[in-house]
Length: 398
Image (cartoon, rainbow, N blue to C red; front, top):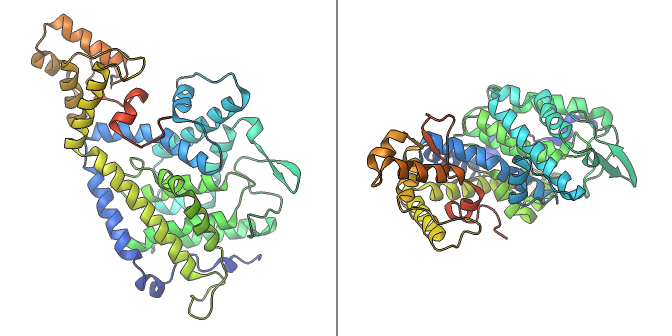
C-alpha cells in the first residue's frame, strides 16, 4: 500500500454524486450557513465564535476519550489550573487546542494552501508544541514513542482493522492529498463534498503518531472557512460528531472498506462507503447549523435572557446576586445590537446616573457585558453562569 492511488477515490465521482443526495445537502448547508451569518449582530457572532472555541476543544478532545468539563476549560483560560496533575494536563491540552483555533482564525489561507501538507503539519505542530509532555507520547505495540509536533510518524501503526500507509510512503500520500483536494478547478458543491471526503482520507493516511483525529477536525473547520462556508466557527461540527460518536467512528471505519464489486466506483476503496461518509458529515453539519440558528433567533433569545434575569432574582444561579430589573433592558439591547453606547443606557435608564453606573458595573463584573476601554461601547457576552440559560444543551450542565 505504498502507492497513493491505493486510497482512490479521494473524491466521489460525478456519476456517484449525481445518484446521491449530496448536492442537495450541500445547497442546504450553504443556505443555512449564510442565513446563520446574518442571524445576529456582527459583534454577537464574534463573541459566539470566540466562545465556541472552548466548546470545540471540549467536544473534539472528548471524541478521543479526553474529557475536560467546560467549566474546567474556562478556569484554565482564566489561569486557574487544577492541583491534580492529570486534570491539569487535560486543561493544558484543551488550551493547546484553543490556541490552534485562535491561530487559524487569524490566518487568511486560501483553500489551496489549506489543503497543503505543510498547512496540516502546522496544525499538528501548533497543537503538540503546547501539549503537556505527558501527552506527547503514545504506546505502539507495547512500546512508548515520542510524538514529534508537525512531523510524520516514523513507526508503523494499526487503527482497528486498518493498517495505514507505511512510513516511507507518507510524503507521497500527503503530497497527493494536497494536489487532489487543492485542485483550483474543484469548485462549488464539489468542493464542499471534497472537504468531507478529505476528512476521512486524512484519517485513513494517519500521517502522525497521534492527534490525527483532532488535527483532521481542525483541518475540516479550516477548509470549510477557506471554501467560504459562512458562519464556520459560530457552529461547531465537533459537537455534532461527539454527540454521534459511535456513528462517526463507524462511518470512518466503513469508509476504509475495499471496493464492493463492479458497481462501486473504480478505485481500490469503496466509493459507496465514501459517499455515505460524506452524507453523514453533511447531516451533522446541517444539524449543528440549525441548532445554533434556532438559539440565535431574537424572539427566543430575548425569552432566555429574561429567564436568566428571573433566575438571578429567584436565587437559582448559584453564587450570583439578584440583578436590577433594568439589567434586562441592557442585556436585550446588547444582544440586539451586539454592542451599545453607554450614553444610550444612561438616557434610557429610569434611574439617576449613579445608580445606572452601579448596574452597568455589576453587569461588567459578572461578565455579562464587556468593554475594551472605559469609554468603549459595551458588548454582549456569554459568562459560564449564563451559558446554559442562553444556549441550552450546548454543553453538559452537571
